[in-house]
Image (spheres, rainbow, N blue to C red):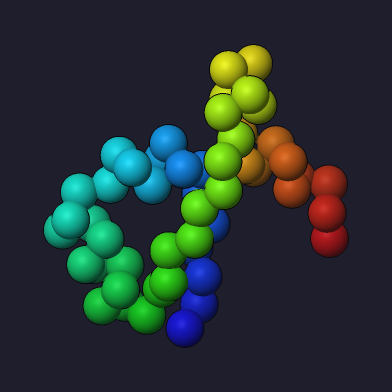
Length: 52
């Protein structure tokens, strides 16, 4: 399955229906703790924006 990456905070905000939808569409949810980065206004997207 394809993976969807998001912060732990973002993953915790998903409803069970949203999680079920992602799974049904073939996505495996993965999360990473970004507490300090999010406190400063950053996000996972900020962390990977320059990687290609």
